Length: 146
Length: 249
Ligand code: FES
Image (cartoon, rainbow over the protein chains, first blue to last red):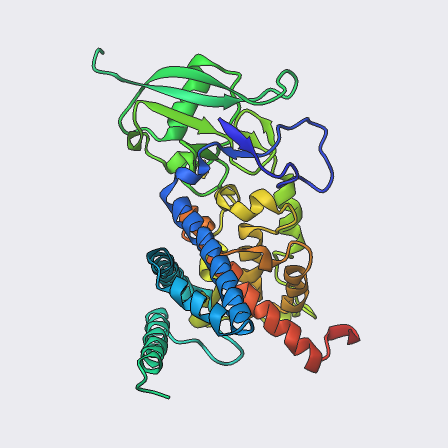
């Protein structure tokens, strides 16, 4: 029926005279579509943790000589690793799109004397910056830029 | 009368004098197509079981007292059409709140948080009556008007995953209301409120789940308020290094 949350959630500073039932949430609180979208966003953190660990491994291989480095490169070409990176790319795109959607309304109407640009303009600027950064990265990786 | 539609209501009950934990009770009642969920609860209370406790007052989504979980979703029951649901409707008290009885939750914890953000106009020196009213331009009103539409219905607290886990968190409505006064051109209490925002239950606990805004029946968008407050509280903290505070702090 329901599952407990932190027992002090929304508790008054001084307990009242009436005994109360502990705060709870419905058992299937996660089944609402909006909650699923949020939990998916939260879950992307796991992929970033794994990326962080794999970067540490690359750094370790760099310091351990050419053989270790070649092993890492070979593993990077394996289907499992490529699938993992496709998943990471999906995670980044999902978080980016979510963030770009929520970012404009997090801007106060005024910051000092200045007003931020209208929401759609801000969103367009974010996507433009994203596209620009991706383009630069592709050009660098493709050897077009130094 | 054979074509009268019937629905089963599974209502959460809790009697603090008898029950260890809440339980559910079922009522099957005739319903009308134009009814809201609250109409069904009132029918049960008036015609079937007078012991059931629930809050309501205005029946027009203004007073904010009829917030409950309907099929697990935080809703204002007076404005939620019954025909949106099937033959079985579950009604429970709002999530994340201690329950006083049946569908009635304890709001004292919210009121503590609410008071702490000073939800009123703070002035260093009150304006004398002869000086006339504090005037505002339409733009100045527009800056905060959306956040002043909150009816304290608590649906946002019931939806917020942070409220469930971090008892100190001030929560959506309290921060939205505090932020509303920070944006008010007549107010001079932003520094005091920002200190509260940066203190225990800080606005930075918010993980921008946006759940509060999705369930808000008045389109207040508390998630926007909280995240605007985060930025302004940081800027205010940085400003405090170069500008002395009132009272020589
Ligand atoms: S009864 Fe007033 S908001 Fe529902």
